[in-house]
Image 1 (cartoon, one colour):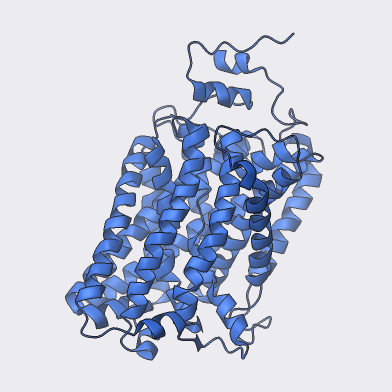
Image 2: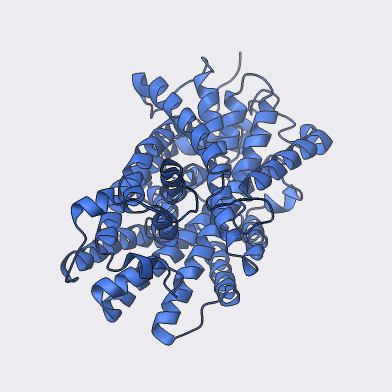
Length: 507
């Protein structure tokens, strides 16, 4: 008969983690609010909505912005709910790939391997996209305030400064990250309130409600209006990414089995409500659609702010967005590094022994932090030549992350042996889970399609996301056959139940 682990001298979180096969190494100091704040900061309605607003202006126009946002939000909430239920059962930093390995009924390690690589790809891509988007906003602000020129080179330099600062802030420790994440959450909420108030009361004229919710525009070059509208949904779908961060910082969160799933769900529904109010206010404040769409700042919302509220207030509103985007990128590096740390802990990444080290002083995976920073820089290098590369990165982020999101949800649905954690969906679980899986299948196909005509290979409008996904799948396959199947989770063919929990607790 097995002897139950002695948990009398350690907390429940460490005991639960030991039951899943891992020793508590990261500093567990995050509250439920801090956990929510990390995911909410990565979703960042003041980042995604602002930096990809141009795409919805081109693909669908106001109707894609104001109707597309809540439409996408409902389906994304289903994905978040389904993920949260699994997170409650398995609150580990590995998150998605660990869930897949536990839930798959056969080929457990292979499922975990592929999900892990798509998650890693998505995390690096979303960090790159967020920080490059932040660089676009900051260079637009500097252009408006100081007349600094906006170019591919200046934007990339700004990107480098921003992402290095994010690496440094994360290196200092989880306490600083927790503090800044909490500040970030309130900055986003207060910032939205200020922007909405200014745009509601300062402009001399607003667009009608009918125009704001039904006006259709199509600058994609494709004649099919429905196709253009669907492409415009990328703005919302790209923004609604990164809420798996609550799972990746679960090992640093108190009462993780309940607070991490709550963080996932809360970050999404708060973003749906606050983001919708923000987008309605911005869209209703458009003064000159054509001029603002092609603004020299390279950022249409910046021009909308200035045209609607005047130069001084407009710059202030843009500053609020720029700071929010800085916070967003910082939180993304946090989540990215924790996933990389966990993946390396299971011997997945080349040089795993280096990336899985935890700094004893700060309690953070310092090496993984800088691995993620370097990976994001490499992925963004093509933006020096073409902004199309940035568009592709946003698509890669959406596709990579959502493939990783949906896989464990699908596996949970076909695994009758799944044991719920303390946070569950009850009788609604099957409906919500299947809706989530179908929606992810739809958007993955949609966002591999060209966003602008003609979209042919060799043209600047070609969408490289499918190429990137195929490359990652091929790399994962080859590396699995060559080495992964021999060393990844090598001691855990049926999960992580090989080392007794009591041994981990006593290490």
